[in-house]
Length: 41
Image 1: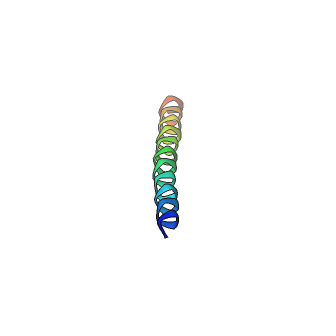
Image 2 (image 1 turned 90 degrees about the vertical axis):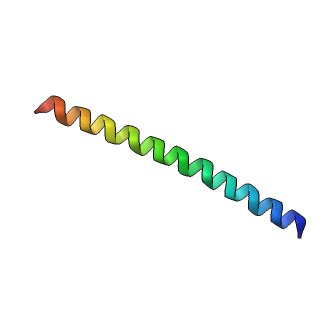
């Protein structure tokens, strides 16, 4: 039972780290897209 709890906690931490990375990548892509849109106007 303890191993199951620790495994679940590890998966949860991994999901939190990946969510942060996905959000950062999305913000970077949005910033690049906005910059190119402004440059073309």
